[in-house]
Amino acid sequence: GTRTVDEYEREFTRLGAFVPDLVGTEAKRAHRFTDGLRPAVRHNIVGHGVQTYARTVAIAQEVDASIRREA
Image (cartoon, rainbow, N blue to C red; front, top):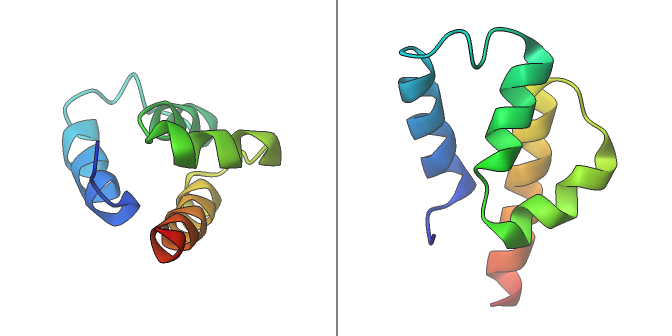
């Protein structure tokens, strides 16, 4: 997709309210969020081993901004 990480994060948060079992822990939420990222962003953050949702989002935002600057 072409959505920014910020756009995806807003949608992920909105939809997560409907499926609490899928995003019930920090690790699950971070993992599910990562799974839905664009491949270019996802491949750059999986090696970080991040377990918290907030840190995952922050790293994804940094990677996304970097990719968009280079484009």
